[in-house]
Image (tube, rainbow, N blue to C red; front, side, top):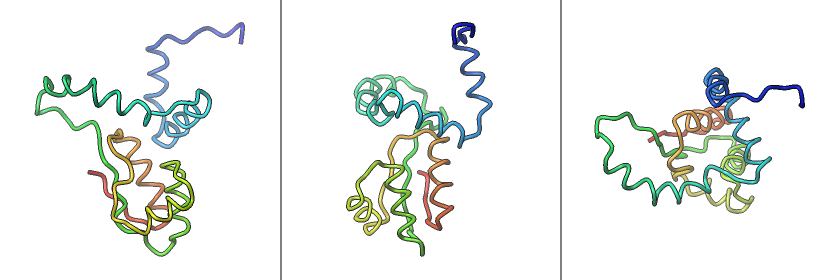
Length: 132
């Protein structure tokens, strides 16, 4: 790594702009695993600090955070439970209880890209997810 040049912030984000949603999700997971943090940990801080910023925001702006709701489980309940565990980091019992109590909010205040990636994962196992 000694001979590699350091990327500028602009180069880094240009690289991210060219990724598919699934590739970006993989990057996020790797970042969370490698550094032991997650975007969910920052949500309470953002909620407290971001309230003033949202008050100043123009109401005509495009929505940037979404809630993902598990609407219907479908016929592959076990596979859905596995995906719930993957997406939420819940334990087996908690994930099963979550699935048994659908419809229920799966994730709150996520980006459109992350919401679409989550929806895709659930569609692959036959569950119905709604992005709000």
